[in-house]
Each structure stands twice: as C-alpha cells, then as structure tokens.
Image (tube, rainbow, N blue to C red; front, side, top):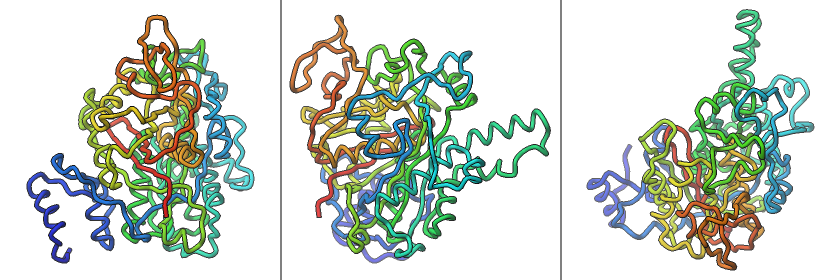
Amino acid sequence: MAMAAPSSWEAGIWHKKKSNGRIPLGAIARKHGNIAMSCSSFSSLLLSRSKDDHHPVERERDPKKRVVITGMGLVSVFGNDVDSFYDKLLQGESGITLIDRFDASKFPTRFGGQIRNFSSQGYIDGKNDRRLDDCLRYCLVSGKKALENAELDTSKIDKERVGVVVGSGMGGLSVFSDAVQALGDKGHRRITPFFIPYTITNMGSALIAIELGFMGPNYSISTACATSNYCFCAAANHIRRGEADVMLTGGTEAPIIPVGLGGFVACRALSQRNSDPQTASRPWDRDRDGFVIGEGAGILVMESLDHAMRRNAPILAEYLGGAVTCDAYHMTDPRADGLGVSTCITRALDDAGVHPEEVNFINAHATSTPVGDMAEVNAIKKVFKDTSEMKMNATKSMIGHSLGACGGLEAIATIKAIKTGWVHPTINQFVSRNSLLVHDHSQSFRQNVDPLVTCFDTVPNVKKQHEINVAISNSFGFGGHNSVVVFAPFVH
C-alpha cells in the first residue's frame, strides 16, 4: 500500500519502529485515517511508543475521528433500565442470589447473578423470543434500548455506514446444551435447525443488522471476559478510519445453566460461599475465594462527533482510546507481575493521548479471585505512581462476573459515574480486628483488604462524589487476553 512521505515527526515514529518494533496506533489512526485496516491487523496496530518516549500523542481533534458515546442499553440482574441499574449500584445493593432456574443443589456453588423476570416485550416478537438463546435475547433488547437512548432515527441515517460489533465469550450455551441433550436422548433428527445459527457468537451482531438494516462492519469478537472491551476498541477504530459513522458495540452472555455453572466449578474458579451469597463477591478482600457467575448484556452507541453533532445527538461521554494485549503465559492464570496488563494500560493511554497523571478513576476488572485481583493491582501500580487522588471500584462486587458482557456493563457504570459525579461503592469491604489500618482520604478505619490495595481508595461500601477527569475500564479474560478502554467527559 503506497503512503505519502512521512513528516519529520512521523519519521521519528518510523525510526522507533525500526529500533523496537512498536508503532503507536494514535500515529496511524490520526495521520492516516483513510487507510483501511483488516480485522486481523487491528490488534497488531494497538501498540504503544517505546518506554523512553514520555509524551503521548495529543488527543484527537478531528470531529470525524473523535468517538463519542450517544446511547447505552443493557440487560442486567437489576433490570433493563440504565438509570435503575446505576441507582442500585450507587445504593450498594447486591444482585447475587441462590440459583433457582434449575436444581443447583448438588453443585458446590449454588448462587449467582441470575436475571429474573426478564421481558423482551416490544423488542422481540413472540415466535423468535421462544426460539432464541437468552444470550441473543439480551443482545437484541440491549441494542435496541441503546438506539432509543441515542435518539437515533434509523430512517434518517445512512445504514451502509452503521455497523455492529457485539461479542460473547460463550455464545448460545443453552441452545448448544439442548442440542447435545436431544442428540443423546433421541438422535440427530431431533436437533433443532436453529442449533448452529443460535449458538455461534456472531449471530447477535447479525440479528441486529438484519432487523434494522445496518450494512456497515458487522462481526463478533470472542476473547472470554475481555470480549466487550475488544469490541469497543474495534468499533471505535472503524469510526476513526472513516469506515462507519455509527457503531453498536458491546457484549452479551447467558451462562447460568447447568453446564455453564458446572464448567466453571470444574475450573475451580467460583466462590463456594453458599451460606452467604451476597457477600461472596468481595474483590481485594483477604478472604475472597473465587468469582460469582453473572449474566446480561451491555451495549453502547458509538458515533463520530461530526455525525453526532449534525443530528444534535445527546453526548454522554467521549471514548478516547483503548488497547489490547496478551499475557502469553497461561490458559487461566494471569501473570503475577501484571506485565501484560500494565503494558495494555500504557498503550491504551497512548492511544487516547492521555498522561497517567490525568486518570483519576478506574473501574477495575476485580473478579474476587485470589490471584487475579492482585495481578491487576500490581499492574496498575506500575503505571500510576501516585494514586492519592484516584478512586477505584469493582462493579462485580454487586452483580457478579458476566463474562463476555462484563466490560459492556462496566463501561455503562463508568459513563454514568462521569455523567452523575457519583461513583458506586465496592461492597463487601469488611472490617477485621486483625487487619491493617488504612486511610480513605476522609476517615481512618480497619479493613480486611489485601495489604497491596491499601494505597487505593476502593470506595468501600458507600458511594462517593468524584469529578472524573479521565477514567479507564479494565477487562481481562482466559487465554491471557487483556483490554483497557479510556473514557472522559465530553468537552466540545
């Protein structure tokens, strides 16, 4: 592909590439926004500058390449309304209960963030509603609610420039399980013809596009629990490169069925605190014993600032950038030193044009696992040397871990924190007579947190007012997949 001769500034970047093999995405996306990149090249271009270059690229100024959030939609253990969802989080309410969708009495873990009384009325017709896997039902409802929230009149937009990138870590697990059961009990003739279409992870994006006529970029990404953030990065880059004006993007998951619960039990990943489920998800607590399985969907409407302003859209926040990396270490365990995560944070900030000192809020991945929580904290400490003005919370303490959908739900929580000026608490931050004395910038108290976390204000148990300058949201998945996205208040 032919390129124009680089400027002196660009020449420096290319010189660095020659010496250390890294090219900052910001340099490419901003200087050569008209270059079309294949999906396979997306991850390889999410690279940062060398460690000796302390000056990130400036924030994007071109309104055609600036990416803003204009709509949000979700399905959660707290219902399908974004404001109600965030109100529950601010109140510090736990959505974790005993599982009653099936008989879980023989499982060593018998609780989760199970969605109850879900209704798709007005969003999915009755026949399809009965056939679809819950993973797809959650996706369709969340996507349509996000469009409503964005006040996007689909009859007045160029549908060839609207795309969908919604992923799932597990896909249509119920449909898959039912087909295996039918095969074993009654033979192949009893397998539904919808088995394959409703199991594959790309069908959520496809169904939204088919129903609404969106002909832009359309696919799914499946990187376990990092899925939603990967989708955000990919979708934003389609806008930055001029390939789309609007992107629906996020994640969806419905794993609370016998084989889903059993699979994670077999991995020894889940908490077994059956006697007190609502305190089981306790990120950073010394007595944490595993994550709590959850489900749901979270979808954002991303839009170029130029397109959003031309239609006078409600702008909720700005997406500044993001990055993805791989630990290349272990199938399920993170690197203890957090190197893959710290590198991902640094590259995300570089892509966003943000200095570490500008970040004052982190929505942590914080799953409540013994190893994962501390690996993330170690990584954060490598990047952020002064955390005195920073707040870091854990949404999963209240809703559990919704796998491929967690980044979508947590992005919504992050954007609501930006808009409202209130950050939700991390619940289950327990006091212990034998724990360390820590300071939360307003009072001293004794807390049962891991000593490595005592330098952070984790917003223990009670919401706090906090004016967010720049926020990051972290998501990491089995396979060593790391992802970080950067949001900020929109400034014209």
